[in-house]
Image (cartoon, rainbow, N blue to C red):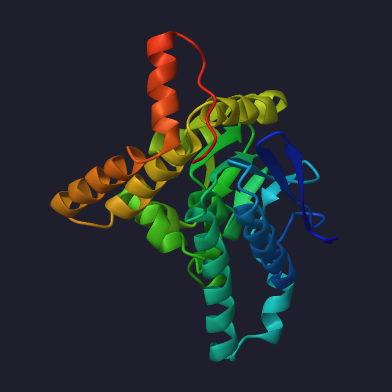
Amino acid sequence: MERAYVTYEVEGRLAVVTISNPKMNALSRPVVEELGAVFDELELRTEIGVAILTGGGGKAFVAGADIKGFKDIIGHRGVVFEGARGMQDCFSKIENSRLVVIAAINGLALGGGCELAAACDIRIAADNVIIGVPEVKLGLIPGAGGTQRLARLLGKGRAKWMVLSGDFFSARDAFQMGLLEKVVPAADLLAEAKKLAGSILANAPLAVEAGKRAINEGVEMSLEDGLVFEAGLVADLFMTEDIKEGAGAFVEKRFPVFRRR
């Protein structure tokens, strides 16, 4: 399907997803709809195990919502609510995807861009990146999941620092806060993201999917319920062909060939 704003290229079992909405990759409704459709499509392509999400054009990863359009929805509470829920649903689709999603943050990641990055599994940023949620400077708060995901990622204190100050943060500061997993020179960003993707793709696909589920769903449970959930996933994996292959390859000192079954 031809899309105007969100495209992807497949390299083996890796998909590189690019958001291109010049000049700053703003999250207009068509962009959000296309992004959701791309992840619906990738979810069904079980040969793909990892997606790298990045921004086109070099200036921005995603620089937030389309502020010029705000004038048309001020005073229309229902429209705003449904729009926020639409972005939340799209980002939750990414967070809960079967795929491991790596954000390769290659430029400004402000407002919705920061919220989108927070919905990804792992965040790698170029060393010249600026990131933040400046919505309070406009009379708003983050509405695409930012208040909830940042609190879960950073703790309430640092999330409040970001949300209530509206400050911009350098990549190094965001790394020290725990928002980013790695900061690399801008020229190396995509290569580093692909290197990490390769490490993940070398492992048993069903085990990787189960590991993501164990963390995402388990942290929302009590510790005891999370432990039971984890044990159930381990037990399920012992029913697969891949565990036979992985254990056999280890004993036989060879590389395993996993088949996601």
